[in-house]
Image (cartoon, rainbow, N blue to C red; front, top):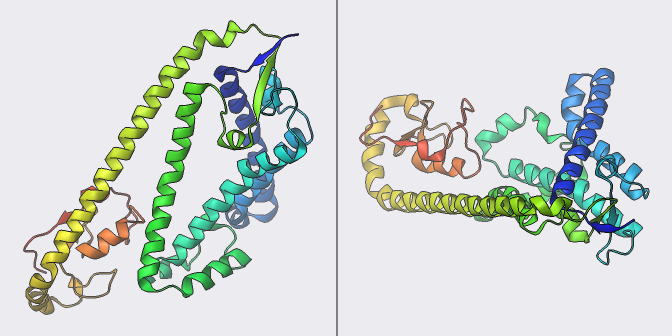
Length: 327
């Protein structure tokens, strides 16, 4: 029986079938925890249950030397870079770690770091507990992050917070880039398989079966790559516009500060910014109608695109700078 390299169509169907069965396993495990421990524990441990379900799925299949249900469905077999041997136990273990554990740790680490670096006004809200964080201050990682952040200066904290924001933006873009490359090249549907060099062979089919539609996948890859470049261009332009607006605001801040302070002193508590807890300077409105300092709300939008008060989502471009506003 002849063996040929598996085409992109089979790899996509394999990934979709595996995701379907993994989703069912995660749903069943989550329902079991919800029934035993209640909704609160389910919300707190939901991410960990999903991680354990995914690890269990790949340990019982890939790590044990068997095909996954998706691979069996499309009749493909894993091979290493030589395409003559099945991947070693170590290679399969590294793949499972990169595919399941590393994304979980990266997401949790960035989430904990971002939470620790938030402003004091937001920390009071975060102290009520966020179910998406799962393990909180009980973990050694969380305590280590708190210790490291506590040793940073205010300027370093701002730099790290901006770095976290950039990383959170770059991870989805990296996945989109990898998917576009897969459509063009036809190999390595998952980034973890590309890193470990695990490919697939198909048995029992005609070589031209997937060749007939490979050109369509290449065209899709070119479109995806073009769309990705367009998205990056728009984000970079938006970032530059935001930086320019911030620089222009800083140039006029000192000149207008005394005038605004004199006018706003007569307005009482209603003119205070809820982010800096001081008199508003260069009043700016969100689409939902709440008022903040221009610098405060733009700094906030660097990490969160939502209103600090009502949590309504909005794009930073929708902020309205109120000239000659008095209240």
